Amino acid sequence: MDSIHPSRPSADRQDTHLETELEEQETDNPQADITLGLVPSPDLPEAIANKLAVNLPDYLSRYVDDQVTWEVKTVTDPLTGATADSDELLEETFYTKERFEWDYAISITDLPIFLDKRLVVAEASRNRCSAWLSQPALGAAPIRHRVEESILQLANEMYYGSSEEAREKQQEKFQRKYKDNKKLKKKSAKELVGKRLFERFSPIRRTTPDADYDLDVRFTVESKVYGSWRMLTGMVRANRPYTIFPAFKQVIAAAFTSGAYGLIFPTLWQLSNALEVFRLVLLMLTSVTLLSVWIVVVHGLWENTMNARLPYIARLYNVATVFTLMVAVIMYYAALFLLFFLAVVIFVPADILESQINDEVDFTNYITLAWLACSVGTFVGALGAALESEDTVLNTTYGYRQRRRYEESRDDDNNEDK
Image 1 (tube, rainbow, N blue to C red):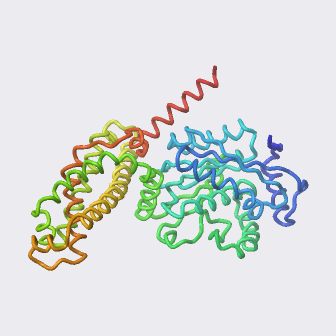
Image 2 (tube, helix red, strand yellow):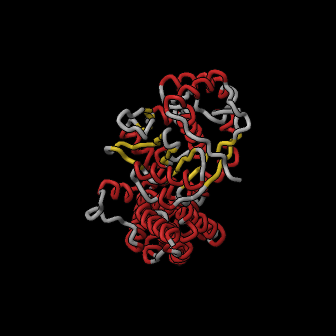
């Protein structure tokens, strides 16, 4: 259904009209339809936006304006996840809004956005009725609720305005509407997300830039230290390391074959009983690290920082790639350990194991034997193997996704010109 695209009054008249709305809590046309468009980048933001679109109309009615009918639509835009420039992102959001004749539009990108090396979480323009949100800047979890709260806040900023007077009046409405809801933790009309524990360490600061006519409000992370950790965990979450796990089938097969062969010889049994826990931990960390490095080298996942347009961003992408792979490799290691543990329990009798290690056997002996076999198997078998589906692996890196999305966006533009 086509949305109603009302004409835009001047800024002063619109301020007066919206202040009256806040006081009387009603509109001239209770049946008016307002369309909010979500413009997510592909992958995780797209999945989040599609899930939120189901309940957002109800939340918008409760926490923005219940005198109108809200409609939420989603359109995935590759360029939203290809540009790390805030001005270009806002311009693309506005272009999409005009193209589909929406009333408001909010882009959700999985790229970190910086301004003078300070992490920017979101920006909104009331004049353009457009806003954008950086998903990694919200952290890793609970990401869906944080995005939901952020969308409601940005919608309020565009709908009622970002002035102190407008925010104070809207605060009264927030207090009435939020007190009976335990799901959304945001209690203030000036906060982007709710007061969770982590927000106390890396609070989000709200500013209203005076120099930029098209930009009314900006949200940035105050602490560079905690903000960097929040951003890094959010980037790893956006990389979706669990999507790489199916590509480890060949690696698991090679590692299990090598480790299982080693279980035939009593030397591995004796070593598992003799090694201290810290040596087993050190061996595990070394094997996990080497496998991660091997995957980076074999699949060319490292971004060249020397020739990068923004070396700082390229280094950031590399760090996120390493952490993403570490998470995926840990998942692989856990699965491999489970396979070895089952194999040891089934095929290694307790009396034979006891005769080889000259010691009493209990449950911990099976755990340490499976643990050692898992690390040895990773060393011997996995370091010579490559992951299946290289595109799946590459898609978890920011640099590759940006380049692919730029190409998709350019292809879309060429198709439109034709």
